[in-house]
Image 1: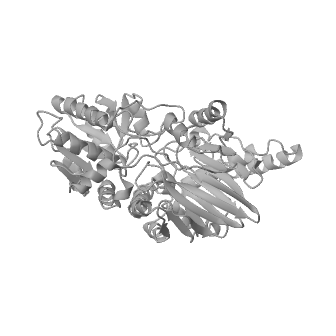
Image 2: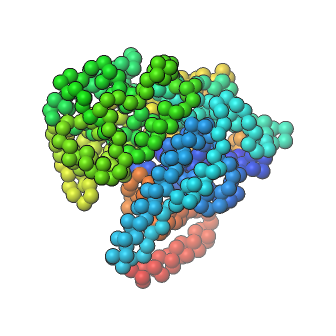
Image 3: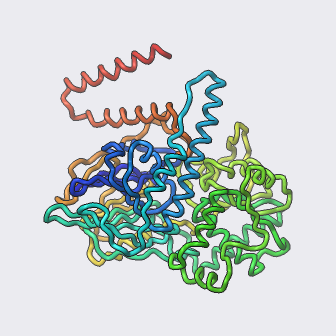
Length: 541
């Protein structure tokens, strides 16, 4: 009964945890890394073909995005998730595969012209479709057996439509332990979704810490967000500019549409009757359809009341849906002041980059951030005040107003995380803290220990605990990725053959770090092997 921490350890993306229970092998999440990867992540310790099932907390790509990769290399087990998560993965994983294939095709054209070797996508549409067929929906609150000695149940945590913490009951012989994986915990008093629901008991808990050392700006009620957004729109349209909102296609876009519907209905923006709102993201449009067609029990009271009254909470006059690339390009030839919502939310890929190219240099326009910006992303750079960015090979000065819709994060802040963990009627034996930047992760673990009476640790990738015995059997230290090896982009781009080489280099760096305590004779032999390899390939350069 062992747990191995792999991804999202002292980082915010790439969630992946490996469990061995009663001879079975399973994963909790299998996500893609986004932004700059700070630490070396250990590989899944067994071939994908040996993984028997995956427990998926929610559909966001940093939790689900490598499921098609897992399938590509042999996984044929079941993926258990809530029904809404399954429906969202059906569109999100296809979209991700399309991006992988498109990027590989583009890279191959460039490589061919330059006489260089080609690239292959991280995975293909066939891989995505294969793993989508393995999705198995599970209702909230229903305990089911997924393997001999492993039962699970999902609890709504209000982060995304269908998101859930996962209770896992594990049995080996006479030993039974229960562990709860928080997934991403939602913010309280957000629109559309219910507040996070508590879990009352567990032996072990793994909790995220995205905002483990920060507090969101307080809002008394939902109307505060509406008024703040209305004010940004009013000021920008008065200047004759555009409000450009880099928005995550699934979750955040639907919240902004919900707010704008109310702004228009209540006449909160004056002098610009019928102002247009463009949603320029095919994925966001598909996701919006999933939202409005989902079981009403997923929603909060206000959302259900609108649906009961026969209203579409995500539609209003002036809403324009952009699907084709020609429709997307036409938006920037419309000279009237408007609102543009486009993905990706961290500005790393997709159509948003075109809208930034056309608006960042305009002092009349506003770039409005409405979600978390990971370290190393273009969104983080703009948010932190860079004066110039490079888009499509062109240097663009930043003259637009840069603003943020404070407090609208889909993640609970420190107060919300503490509220969730303190809902356990009896303190768990041990709390594992992950899914947070290095400082946030360590700070929140320290807060749990010193201020809240929990025993808490923040493990690095590769750390292993024996859950039956309640002890650590392998403790690792964080291995920093050499600066020159850090990839840019959001992990949605194809890794290609060079990406595989870089991954091999990171694996070697991690291996070297483990030889510190080995006998000198073995270190000398290993050093010679590495130097011989370097000598061999330096001759090729």
